[in-house]
Image (cartoon, rainbow, N blue to C red):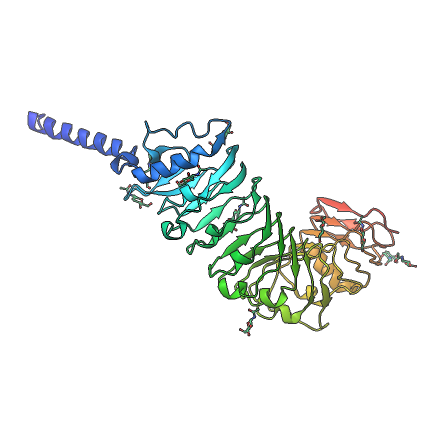
Length: 380
Ligand SMILES: *[C@@H]1O[C@H](CO)[C@@H](O)[C@H](O)[C@H]1NC(C)=O
Ligand SMILES: *[C@@H]1O[C@H](CO)[C@@H](O)[C@H](O)[C@H]1NC(C)=O
Ligand SMILES: *[C@@H]1O[C@H](CO)[C@@H](O)[C@H](O)[C@H]1NC(C)=O
Ligand SMILES: *[C@@H]1O[C@H](CO)[C@@H](O)[C@H](O)[C@H]1NC(C)=O
Ligand SMILES: *[C@@H]1O[C@H](CO)[C@@H](O)[C@H](O)[C@H]1NC(C)=O
Ligand SMILES: *[C@@H]1O[C@H](CO)[C@@H](O)[C@H](O)[C@H]1NC(C)=O
Ligand SMILES: *[C@@H]1O[C@H](CO)[C@@H](O)[C@H](O)[C@H]1NC(C)=O
Ligand SMILES: *[C@@H]1O[C@H](CO)[C@@H](O)[C@H](O)[C@H]1NC(C)=O
Ligand SMILES: *[C@@H]1O[C@H](CO)[C@@H](O)[C@H](O)[C@H]1NC(C)=O
Ligand SMILES: *[C@@H]1O[C@H](CO)[C@@H](O)[C@H](O)[C@H]1NC(C)=O
């Protein structure tokens, strides 16, 4: 056994101190590099416009390092604010975008699901002031009124923009005419109106996901949107768009995975032998002028899981292909059409299946245990 000398005791003590010192550094990254004073000032200016009923921002005081404030994340190397994450915090009042964009290193700004009513922008010198790193901006699910500030369109690094479920209005021509290179754009459930500019697709060639649904947009957009060849998700229903959708529109959209044209007045004209360049997993065509023929290209979709063609005037289907398609899906909504097929002796196994308000006849079908919900009401 090694004798316990004062020298080894000293080394042990040093070892212990090292562990403790390292430990304390780990538990307070932020004291290593203190919060940048300019960033602290910008955050406090933002807080000034916020109504904070539940004191979610009570940690935001100069007594504390701003990198330790609720919702604030900093780079552990530079001490600069990179993320502001204050979703679901019951915050109201206004979002002072000018002050937040003074956070030069801010990449991620998420204020979704609060009660903000306005975005305020300080119009002095902003063009030269703001050269930001903002990549992700989510202001969805608030009560923001007014139009989209131009300042948002000037964020050249922005990849994800989500303004859905607010009360924004006006034209978005200015925003969408700018070279932006967005990958995700969600403007759904607002009161935007007007046209989608021709330049939109050239300015955002990388766009993967576009949701314009539930607004007041007008015009024919098909030539523009058909050029967005990176699209995986396209949702444009519940607007006043016009035009005829045919296979030409989809010719470049080979990555499409989700298509939502619900509640629209588009005319559909597909060649009966057309085979799409995509395989969808989700297809929403409820309340459209799809029928009377069930479009045969839908039978080619072997990955389809969710399918909604309620109230779409369908009466003529290919019986075998129709049941094969229904069987492969886990959610099917075909209510309120005029489909006239025999159900006797069939075995239905779709998880959720609505065939109500049609003209199905015969005896009740067999229902497999995999079915969770089935509605066959209002048939014959
Ligand atoms: C310190 O930084 C590391 C790496 O960024 C992180 O995983 C850790 O949670 C931080 N610790 C504190 C107390 O913030
Ligand atoms: C700083 O953060 C990066 C990643 O965010 C991490 O890999 C690194 O270990 C951190 N450095 C320190 C000293 O905590
Ligand atoms: C904000 O406060 C509410 C009510 O106290 C709480 O439920 C919520 O989790 C808080 N949010 C954050 C991000 O701290
Ligand atoms: C918003 O922030 C800017 C920049 O920090 C500031 O000049 C302006 O006064 C602020 N506006 C309001 C309404 O607080
Ligand atoms: C907003 O859109 C972005 C990008 O598509 C997405 O990651 C985010 O989850 C959306 N926010 C909400 C609250 O759905
Ligand atoms: C779509 O792309 C084609 C070929 O690249 C081009 O000629 C046409 O002008 C584009 N249309 C729009 C609206 O961008
Ligand atoms: C359908 O779209 C129209 C506008 O085209 C809109 O007024 C209506 O509310 C939408 N209906 C639903 C159920 O979304
Ligand atoms: C049923 O579909 C027709 C169009 O096919 C539509 O006019 C009607 O509103 C729909 N009814 C319901 C209850 O959805
Ligand atoms: C259902 O199956 C029974 C027994 O195999 C047969 O007698 C009957 O004709 C079938 N009904 C229909 C509509 O195919
Ligand atoms: C329902 O089907 C019967 C024949 O089975 C047909 O006589 C009737 O016209 C159909 N009703 C509708 C509304 O399509």
